[in-house]
Amino acid sequence: MSITFRSATKEVLITVIGGGVVYAALMVGGRFMARNPKPVDNLSDGDRLSISLDLSQHQRNIILATRPDCPYCRASARFHQNLLATAVDNNIGFVIAVNDKQSSAQYLQASHLAGAHVVETDLTKMKIAGTPTVALVDSAGVVLRTWQGQLSPDQEDQLIQRVSRRDTLPREIEAKDVPSMAEARGFIVVDITRREVKHELRWKAVVIPSDEMEARAPIELTGARGVILDCGHSFSLECDATRVVLEHQDLTNVTSVDRGKDEPGCDRKTQKK
Amino acid sequence: MLLRNRTLVFLLAIGGIYAADQIAVLQPGTVGACTLTRMASKRVLPQLARPMSQIGKVSLTESLVVAEITVSPADGAVSKASILVAPNPEAERAVLSAVEQWRFYPAVKMEQQVPLKGKLFFYFVPGKVILACNPSTSDK
Image (cartoon, rainbow over all chains, first blue to last red; front, side, top):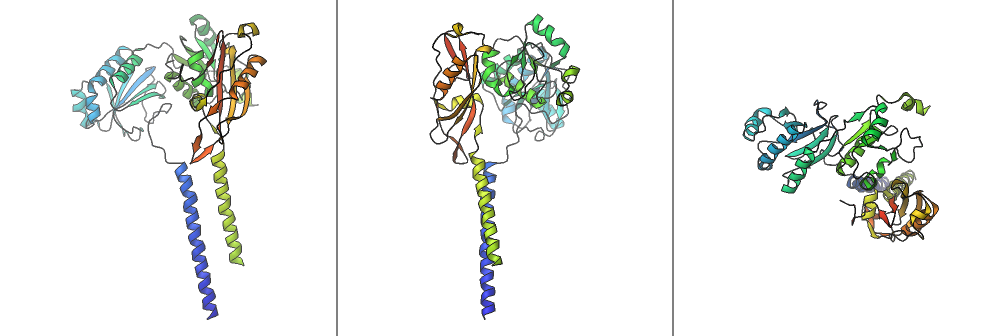
C-alpha cells in the first residue's frame, strides 16, 4: 500500500514538474519568438538582386516587377510607359520582371511595355512582396531605391526626375585616377572608415565614417558635383550601404575606388600583418 | 533527494535563462544620429563664449563636434556623455554642457524601457550652431 502511495506521489510530482518545464519553456521561447519575429521577406534598399541578370551595361537600371492580373499595375501602366521612355532617353537599363512571360505578353503589348527587356522569374524569390515594384539598381545589382505599389502623382514625378538625372561617374574608378578626378573635376573624396580603425588617408579626403553618413552628408556634402567613396578599410557591404544612404540624400553621382585594382600598399592582407 | 536536486537544477536553469533574457533586453540600444535627435524631448544648442572665428578653424568639417551619449531609461536624462571629435576645448566644453541638458522620450524594447546610446553632431559655423538631423532644418 505504502509503495503504491509513494509511487503515485512520485508520478504526480513528475507530472507537475514536467508540466512546469513545458510551461516555462513555452514562456521563455515565447519571449524570444516575440522579440525576434520572422522578418517579412521584402526587397529593400542595399539588397543585392537574387536573380542573375547582366546589368553591367548600364550604370543604373530600373527593374519593374509587374503582373497582368494586378489592378495597381494596370492603373500604373501609363506611368510605367513614361518611365520606360525616360530610362531609354537617359541610357538607363530597363528590365521587366514577370512570373510568366507567356501570360504577360498580351498585357505588356497593350501597355506599350513590350519593347523592354522582359525576364521570367519567380517574383517571391526576388523578394518582391507586391506588385508593381520599381527598383533602381546599380550595375552590380545593388538595389539603391525601391518604390512599391501604385504611386501618387508626386511620387511619379520624383521618380521620373530621378531617372532623368544624368550621372557621370561610373560605379568604380581606379585608385590612380582619384587625385586627378578630385582636382580637375571638383569631386569630393570621402573616406568612410569607422573611427575605431586608425589609418592614414591616402588622398586629401573628408572623413565621414559610414555610420555617421546619414547625419553628416546633408550638411557636408550638399551641392557636391560628385562623391568618390574611399571604402578601402571597410567591408564592401558597408560601402554599398553608404551608397544607398547618399542616394536617399539625393547625392546620386557617386563612385568608389575599385578595391580589386587598389594600390599594392593598401592590400588588406598586408595591413593585417 | 534525487528528485529535489533535479528540481533545484531545473529551477536554477530557468532562472538563469530568465536573467540572461532580462540582461539582453537592458543592453543599451545604439541608434543612428537622426533617430536619436528625433527622440529628444528637449534639445539645447551649445553656446560659445566668443565667436568660433576668434578661436580658430572655421571650415565646415573642421568645425564639427561629435558627442556620444547614453540616455538613462529611468528619466530620459543623459547619464553619460563624451566628446569624440572637437576642434578645440572651448567647443568641447560647450557641447558637453549642452548635451547634458538634453532629455529624451523613453525607448521601449519588449515592453521595457532601455538605455539609448548614440551620437550627436554639432557644427560651429560663423554666427550659428547647426545640429545635424534637426527636424526643423535638415531632416527630410
